[in-house]
Image (cartoon, rainbow, N blue to C red; front, top):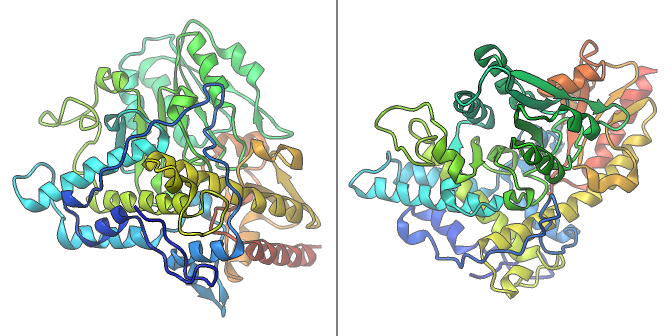
Length: 488
């Protein structure tokens, strides 16, 4: 597999996507899936996160190549580039993803397990996307990957199934920091099963979890701890490996919401040690889908709510109804895009026709880890600039970790209030200027209420991913400074 150069002077070439991506986009047959070595990566069992190979941030030229692969980034508003800072609610998608979805619908749109060509092609794609997803999150077995409509739907399905195993008096632990999709499904079991839900509070000064409080909530009746890897509201990275160890010490399972972490870092379920983990491909440059990992023995042992003819083995027993084949074809191409990113820029952010992963002849998992290392390095530069710039706006108050020396404890998602203006007013004014941001509680229902901000409209949230630029940060700050000046 060749690495490609971007169409910029230092290389004088053009983007060459990995063969698997080009094949998905052109013809969805079982021939397109290039055999890749299944090379297991060494893991650090003491680490909660798998950072992957060392990398540097994308250069300005490299970032230009990356941005050229996202058609949405060419959109303009009143003659200026539209600024997408709404990534926490869903990222934009690269060209191969769009092409693969179209190709699937044009050539291989068929239901599962038919005795004809289009169904066989579709099944081959489904098999490969399960394998690619397993590589993306470090799962050992593609059967441990379950796809569904979204993370919320998958979590409600799993909570109902897990609820069948509970008795009155059993306990589930949730947190005030989490998205409500990792809270409400477990709260529902209180009424249905007579269990007790216990809460982990936050430290309001930096929006981090009270781990001492968590330790006090754990006991012999604890059956599951539900926790987020990263806060979708304020960007806090939770010490999930430590939390998993605490839960396992009392015999409880863990259910980790990695929706907000997956676009920013290499998630490794084996390094985390978690029993379940969920994420959303549309938050990491893919189509609208949900994705769940569960240890195989748990997926096999729990009774799924399903129709009788459906498979009795994972993942099929959990993938209720017909999957969205076009979206899964798009997701496979998204993984291919990330492979290209890792293969091309994974050594030092220089496009020399061969990346670190290509040099070592590594497998897909290595390329994906290399990609997320590039993503992390690029985002750290953006995060430092954004933190400094946002802190300079008069009347703006950031929530969460704001110490520049603690940037490793957060992802580049920032939430704030601005004196004298409601979050919706600010978001509306920014929208008129062609800058997309979110306002409200973004389903971080408990956090916003704990901070006492629900009645005033929550906060404004801006999020950065690897295709964002320093110039976009500058435009945001210019706009916010203007709003702040008019509000005084």
